[in-house]
Length: 509
Image (cartoon, rainbow, N blue to C red; front, side):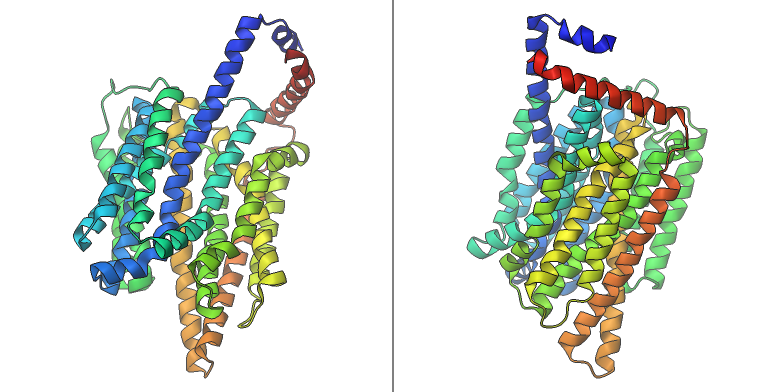
């Protein structure tokens, strides 16, 4: 109560300064989300343009996969290292450096006239994307320490992260069909320049831990190589097979490097990744649940796109438009609705309801047949998935960052991003293999190609629904706070103070 009284007695000059600072950080949030959107779009916008790229640069089918896989491998490989560098040398500096790398790489991709230049530029683009996106969550947590404002800020970030992929499909279709594939990369340049200019002025730099204790270069190399090899094994498993000798061999090498990294970090005084972070229950538990969630989301997104194009005959623009209920519902939930629901019913209950909605949407997709109409079946399936994602990502983000100490916030942000990339890649590889194998089995049994494809997608949707359902169970087992815990009392006190401040705010104005 005394805090509220002091706020009411602030001098007008201090109130004006506070208003200016508040405006600055919200504009800075828009800049961060703009950078995140650019990188999320790039993960899907290229999918639509692959046939045109293959035709113009004469890619073989095998080499063409590197246009996507090169980006995914370096993006996944550098997330943890970049996140920790943000803690050490400053997150603003790391974010802006990543933006520059990503924008320069986008120019190189756009002017590429050979396979080697395009693949090399995509590798660099993945590094830039990882460097910039790895610290965004940590900056948001630092800029918005208050519960209510942090919920709104996280909601905007969640919308960009979850809904950007479907926007990328639509944007890719429009740019490729109306101009040509080069513009899917050139469009990043003005966005990157604007985000850099505004970010340099508006984002406040944190005081990094510093490099006085030395840099764990060996640990940095080990974790980067381990994650890159792991990403390589996963994304190439669709080509070589999940249980092939090549996939298992590369995966084993990744695990050996990871074991060596953990052994090294346990012995160092100033490790690149302090192992105490792995003991943060909310961070690691939310990462597990998020991984199960994105497995279901990615299946709906990518396999849903294939179903719309290969079975129902949609073109690229129609496919992007078909996902608008998913994108729009995520946006509606992210602008504050999820935060208010979580405030009233609790973050865990909101998360559980969101995951259940995604399960229902996936089960509805599993009933869509060869001649399915868009409305009502597909429309409501995408709507349920979007509502569920919008209700789930914000609680997962807030719970995941809740127990991360400020000095390790960048590393925690990197871990959250890695969980999305790792589980998303594993989920896509596994569900894609399941769909393909079942399609082959149905074709061998005499089904038509369209019918066999549909059956393969249906089985993948059912497996994805089971993964998300497992996420519901994991959430209530791992993320439930102990009954009567001190944290519950603190949370309740913070909610009471927030309500008092909300009551007093009109008088402040």
